[in-house]
Image (cartoon, rainbow, N blue to C red):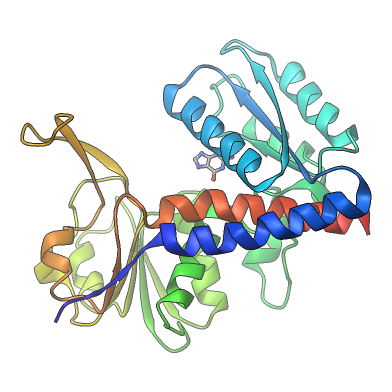
Length: 292
Ligand code: GUN
């Protein structure tokens, strides 16, 4: 079997074209574009890169973006003041606090301070709580897990009645994507660092979402034929034969998996482009909710 390749770039481009048109229509109607406010604390190179990519994507689709950058030793009060500034700014409709933040910052207090109307990252406890409870609908859901769900849908898979295995239980990906798969009526198993033999669960999976950040961790002979694989892992590994001396690989052994899976995301270019697209989509939604 040769798997259907799920190309997030193609899906993201199509969705971003639509967002661009809607953003232009919003600006035409209101005289200003939808706006995203980004808060970055510290100088972590990966976080700086993510923030740059998010702001570049805003520009590409016609969203306004503003950033508040604070030093590594910023105080809790300074971070809360930045959140407050964006909460009160009528041209900012969505707020993103880049995670992780330095240890001295109480992350929960900061995320709780984001206005519920502007919580485009979906990490406010009220939105996460709504995601966790049957019959409640969060206003916003986190970007990466939402991107995973869109890709599953794009692959033509209805999770209802399927066995889904989520590898990883992070607040940002594993836990929320497990909640979303449950909401979509899959039978969900979460495997994590204390799971004695993750492969025994993975062998039963019709849908596998891998988000543990371990290069090529999932082996081809663990997979059920036809499984749909969403690989969130983006791991940099040394490769002397590659032009740059390294390459990006997922959490799943792609070369082996592509002959067994029914569908599999590419890495890079699978989930990554979807994360930014979902953030743009949430910001547009926030602008419509606040303006209308
Ligand atoms: N750090 C890694 N992923 C994310 C994300 O989706 N949102 C935020 N705010 N920080 C992150």
